[in-house]
Length: 280
Image (spheres, rainbow, N blue to C red):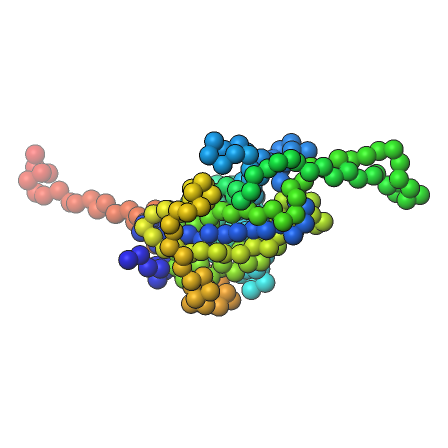
């Protein structure tokens, strides 16, 4: 039986906590890639045409929420995405970072312990919905001839995906679960679009990643043990205590890492020659 780790481990212990997550759009959303007017869809041979949300978008939103919450507890308040990662806080431990590009200039990198997959809509895509806006003049507040067309994913679309924590402690699980529940907006222009209801609908601890939403949608009758999510969440520590405990454990782990990367050099002592060596 696979259990939670007591403390974060430098080396993988082969434990995977999988959270099956469902997100339901409460209003239209703009899910796109680099093209400004592209709504992301993908055609699967077994599933047909579906709306998709790439994992990188979910992960980016989740990481910002974790950072936001830890700043509220005054933990590494200066840590921020891109070049200002500190690489010694709960967020960096969970989501990783590169020492060479961080402002801390530390001598180590961190791999992400939070893994995921593309979120897939539970229903097929019949047509992409267009939304047209009038451009409004700033001075006279009149609508002109300019029109703007936005392609959106319709409200009430349901997405499913899995979020996996590798080698989890209870504190790691508490932090990720809390911030998944705080994920209330997704997509572009989320100040006015993309409200979403996020729920964890199943949970599984195993020695491998053995739940895939692709296969669940491909074969709805596939037997996957349904665990009690409410009881699981109730057994986790309070999120404020989880941040504090994990933050203290990271410093101990990093001391071991830095010590392992910087072995003490043995001092060489020069031995005095014997009388025989001098004579020779």
